[in-house]
Image (cartoon, rainbow, N blue to C red; front, side, top):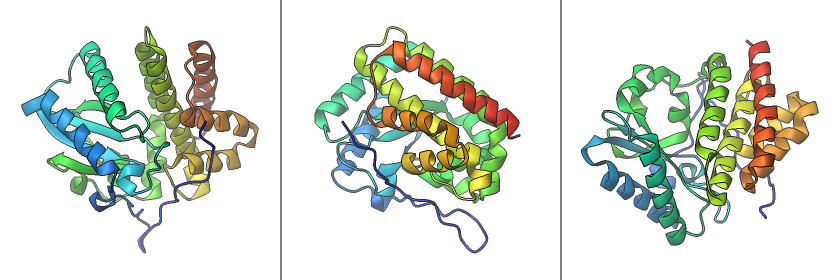
Length: 267
């Protein structure tokens, strides 16, 4: 059981009000550097010439990863269409299992794909990439993304309802027929996204920004004290995921509906 603790940071701003990313390749340190290289080579071997670039984001890229708690959050951009969903899930499961055997100090990794062409059409909307990721292979798109102010993040709230619907649909699609370990991985995945959606919901009022889970929970609870217990449960599930669909799915429905409703009100 992982204990909830205050960990991470609020992003600072420069003299012009732009948020200062705190990620760097230099911050990917042992033992995480070997895990990063394993994931990179897995993408290269599986995708070959279709692979455009690979990114690592989150605590590993910020030098804040904690052994026994943190995961390795990765994604790849592809030339052409991504693999079929079934093939993607099978490959992801295989790589995740190999990864966990080799790097038991890490939580289960996040591995996903996106097409490079549509991804690049609106790079100004990819503020999360600018603030939270480093490129470890291929053409680095991050320098092409404009600097980010809090106003940029606030503007993205108009997409939040659609985003919440998308991740819930993805959860239902993936969890069907999933084994207990896969269900736990999905539990962590969606609860992290709910926590960060909660941060996005209050960022215009909080006047600060963080993607770190505890600070997302803390800022959300400050403005929605009546939902503090629910979001703390999301934090608990993100750190200590459950394998019961009967408990997880009603919780996801309840919190997802609340966040969607508040996103509409806050527009």
